Image (spheres, rainbow, N blue to C red):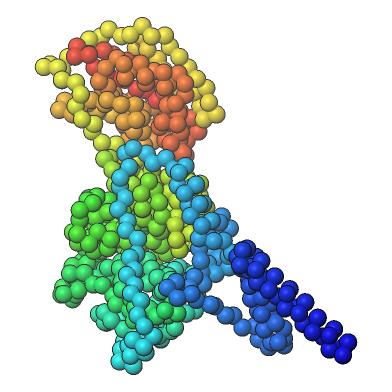
Length: 547
């Protein structure tokens, strides 16, 4: 009897504890959640223990209404950007990436002359959730179209294909094959998530500028578990008569490619294509099909995406690896990476297409771009740009600036000279001398006289940057021991600024160092005499002694 009583008392005590626990959980739900979570962890650990000795099994649990995370969630890290590491090997969250992006982008300083020269539109994916039953019906009725299973893509030319995982590569090949066959609607060849599909599609359009009739947008349907049921490509108007569109596209590309004939180095070909492209194309935010190479090559009007894809396509035809890069430069922006024999270089032909055209963003390192360009998305896995042999070899062309001073009715000049004292500075590359208030001494050395810029019907030089460019242009094609040339600047204020530039040594960086490097010379001594003219402008007489 006593044993039965003890059992009843024990059972009653246990029941009381259970009721107390339920009451505590009721008034403290957070405790219940923690206990529940702990039970889930224990269940996974038990399952793992039971599978000891078997191959590891990866399981993904997908909540209804959410899409599973892509296998290659982006990691915006310096290591990934420089090592071309596969994007699946990281543990950073999307929030971490967004914070890194915002931090880097907030520090950018876009120069005023290129501000607004952007226009890249990221890939747009439009997804619709359907029932599993509907997905099963699609699987039975819809063809996979062209699978592309026999296709191969060289990672040196098509880097995005090399970046993505095997499942994404299979769908990449399928998208490429169906785009070429003009099949708009098909079922995926692999069980793929929506995010992985986006990586596959983005990689195709980033690697293949020749697919100009494929818009950078697509549609798809997916199941509650996140699997993609079908894919629909979006074609632009050129697909209506694709053979004719291809002929126009190839003919326009050939005109630029033909200009490289007779040049044998990849660098020479790259520079010629860069120059030819920006001389033919005009930046136009309203250009049709402006995300395609077609808009640049055929229409001659485009935005950064069109410049970059046209540049990429022509260099690919010349067997020069050239990659399409997307990122941020004040706004969404696109540019290129080019591989030459000593490494990789950034090229932004859009930002070089200014007035005048420049080489400011041609063959630059990542360090050069750090202040105004940030890579985004899959582009962070492209190679680091650290080449240097072919950087800084180009000289910006000079153009005639707008007229700012009325020209005199006669071409006469006075012989009065300013009273500014002489000044001389010495550098490692030689002596640069500014001389005013005196006449250049007569000499018997070999002398080349360059025609005055700013005389006759030409406009006057009105800024110091153009002055440096004109000095360089006057000297670069000459190998004489003494070179003389005349230039006309608008007024005394500009002459005073030029004088100060010589005094500070700015003229060395402005044009003398460039000249010495280009001509493989050791030193240059430059004498400049300023002669005021009746209209307020100044005639600057230059005499450079080269050694």
